[in-house]
Image (spheres, rainbow, N blue to C red):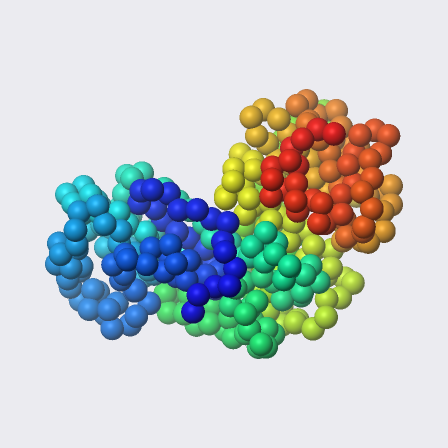
Length: 387
């Protein structure tokens, strides 16, 4: 089924890895962009079993393809050993490959041939407002997320529940990523409570009743299967002691709420972290799609309670500080972190994004942006522009 929403991502002209969480529409996007490519769907159990028994079958088919043609290998993480053949046919017949998957774990940990840099990496994220157009609704995005399979569903809550179960069954259990599926299942809702929080493996281990070393392994699995990402702490030149532990974000609000088994209306308690996570995902998508930044981190003095800047973007020696607040009402107290980071060398701009309707600028140069205006500036890259 084709997607009604055109995607921002543009493919490179040569071979590439395409990664993204399940349900982001990778296969659909590939069918639209590469309609004439030869496809090998490793999620098809029959094909998977055939190639597992005799990987040389792939080479036999590749020899029939005209040099320079595109080939799509979907679900490549299931048989990473096939990349040896991919490498050979890239060299011998100049075939161009799209290597699509929902996990980077086996590609990275099994001694896999990663094509010696001959294939770049691209990622597909949940839908962003630019793609959804007039269908974008922030309240719905915070409640159900923006995975294409959920956006198109008549019953989004049921779809998300099934999604979480499918992840456990097919991504984790079937690929034997953990020894104890029961322990991992207990870990998931606890880790979901850490959305937008500094990672505390010891506290998570205590709350879900597993060893701290297991929690560290589980966190790695979530990141490798592209369900979560971590934002490191920013190390500035300011004369303050800063936090060093990263913050954890889930890739989509719907995923994190499904894992928590909490898909009713968004509560006041979770709104702040969901909104911050949505902003993190938006920035991350445009960092990948359009080079919005080179690095993204957060800043917080170790002893400065309540003093934090959610996102510090760096590009070309310049720095952009962004604070996200889910409140529809502007309050000067929201600017505490942005004011504390003002002496940072190379600071190009400070921005507060909130859910209110008025655009403001403070006397000390902080821009207060409603969500629609912030989104437009991120899409265009004008968020870097000093006012």
